[in-house]
Structure formats: C-alpha cells, structure tokens
Image (tube, rainbow, N blue to C red; front, top):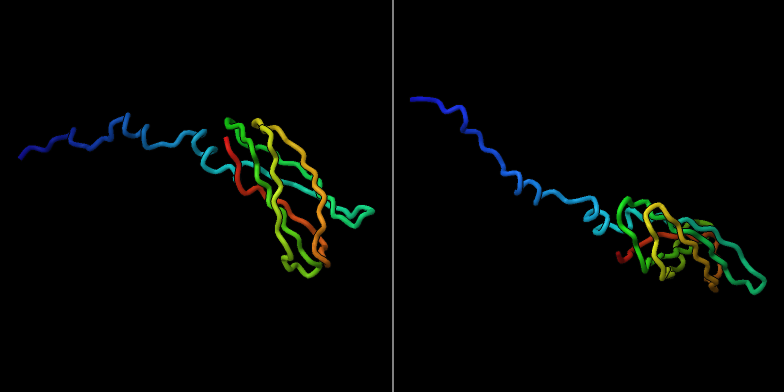
Length: 122
C-alpha cells in the first residue's frame, strides 16, 4: 500500500472566512460590551436626585444610537431599592461620548446610584 502525502483535509478558504465574525458584527451583537456608562448624583433643593453621566463608545467601527441606560438606586447597606431607565436618543460615534442628565424622586433611603448600558441600536 502506498501512502498519500497530500491527503490532509483542508478547509476551503471561503468556508473559513464565512465562519469568522467580523469586528463590526461582534460590535453590533454586543453593544453593552462597548458602551461604558459613568455617573454621579446629588440632591437638589426640591429633594430630587439629579443624576449626571456620560456614555462612551469604546467600539472601533460601529456608531450606536438610542442607548438605553439603566439606573440602579441603592441604600447605604447596598440593598437595591429601585431601577429606572434613561434613553439617549442620539448617535455615539466610535471613541466619542454623550452626556445625560435626569432628575428623579428616588425612594427614601437612597444613598447611591449606578448607571449601566443595557441596549443600543446601530
């Protein structure tokens, strides 16, 4: 019996390329992974909590829009008291940031606020 040296199985290049996800596809499928929210809060004279923050797009290709930011309100002991949403109806280009500001009457005992991006369109 003769041994064939070229019997290695090779994946055709076009099939391999079809199986790979492009960077743009990855960024489109996972907007929350590429949008970073930072916020700070204070009380105003009307006893409302004023939340100011920024959302930064760390993606390289995709421009996001209609960003949904979820706000979490915590007590001094770290108990989650309430959740709310803030929408940013604007486009955020790669490497850019957008500011947001909202005023809310938060639950009694609210000590801190955390912002997190939950979804966005592209």
